[in-house]
Image 1 (spheres, rainbow, N blue to C red):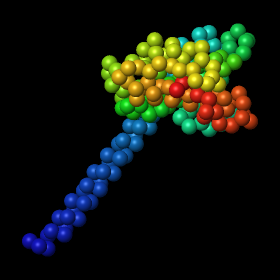
Image 2 (image 1 turned 180 degrees about the vertical axis):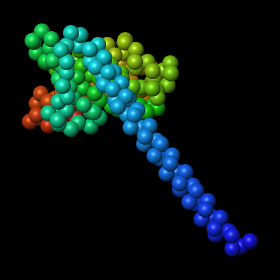
Image 3 (image 1 turned 90 degrees about the horizontal axis):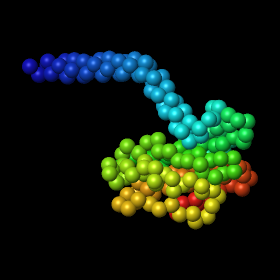
Length: 196
């Protein structure tokens, strides 16, 4: 009986290894089909949100490399004017919220004024409290602020200090990215925050 134990353990280990390999191959196979679909949905959501912030635009291009590297900023886009006027800018920024990342899209006109803010993701925030950062009355508080304003306060949401703080941080990161784009020689704007 003792002689069969090593064979049984070896057989079990090889069986588990084979099963794990088959499952890994199946996951990779399914991912090869679903990854482009998921990426397409993400691109469609981005396009829709940019169109909401900038009605009548004629498209956008990723200019993240021109804006330098700013903590919390995923991407910077130049939004092309459909009328031939000055282009606008849109920044995708992220900050840690109460239950995960808060992702925001912040729109700026050619002068650096915030024209609109959209929440892309805040699913981990508390329903009924932290989710209020998605409500228009809160987002409208950012509209009209300049990217380089000092001490322009946006009221937080009572009971949702972490969530509203994450939204403020994401907007500030977007402002720093626009500052780096507009003023590449000035460097960091950390002391000049839009919202405190």
